[in-house]
Image (cartoon, rainbow, N blue to C red; front, side):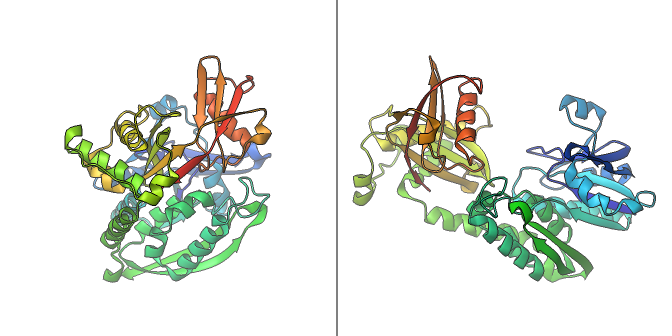
Length: 426
């Protein structure tokens, strides 16, 4: 009676799941030169409203995108290609069933899993016979000619995910290595996790239909058949405990520089003054590798998303340790792109510390390498910096363009270029 499609190319918000709210939902592939490949379904707004209401009991709310919200955020009212492509195979159902299409929120996988549980609760309450489709690609980095280049994490991510799907091994999917996921360049994992949450508490038979990687992009197709209630598959609390244990292991293995940054944030959140701080001594072998003074960037991530990043190009304090303390506090509480970090978030933060080496002037972009070197662009009093080895920055052209944008410079403006190396500590 109802199809529900979760698409990574639908409107995406950081803190809510967006559901298309137009009464009639239409989509086509005209942006790909195939305007005749089109679908039209009636929206199941009654069930959409039930999902939104049920989601209020979870960690992520759902928001129905009405005309006012669509105009405020300048959103298209057409279905995105992530929804349109699978629906083209089901267009013969258009007159017989309704459709709900949604994106996901950029929140933790555990929160998305809980959202899937809320979605399933609303469907059960409605009594609708429903099919849920989790749309999205796997890795975009399978081969050197892939759209985003090659990364060995790409094939490994696809291999691990498809194997876990075949075994319906939800805990393995939820605990995949965060760095591998990031480097793989996937876009469909969050859609899948919402689906897995919708299947919590019931027996499930999974069946892998196919996997292929044309164009350097991974495409996996699998079906999930829910059965009767199964207490052994009430996994939400287990998954959340798994995350807590991974966090403890991560913090236990942090480098001394990262531990210093974390301790600084902990002290700041507890209201301790500088004279109450415990002195930190770096191991002798680490001291020998570090400059006595240097610019430092402190980056904070939470659930794979940037939570704060502030740094100094050149040293502004008496030591690397002081530079870390200063910039850790700035990243957590003074990065105007984000709300200040709260005490409840501290254990979920993945912290990295980049120690910068002096920048050198270069003559052209041919002397850059986005994996090895950071870049500084300067023109007059304006400058922009981008660290090396960042997710999604795969070419020198991308690197320089982002640095220019940070400096409020146009893409075609001539600039002075500098490169620098970093030591990254995790």
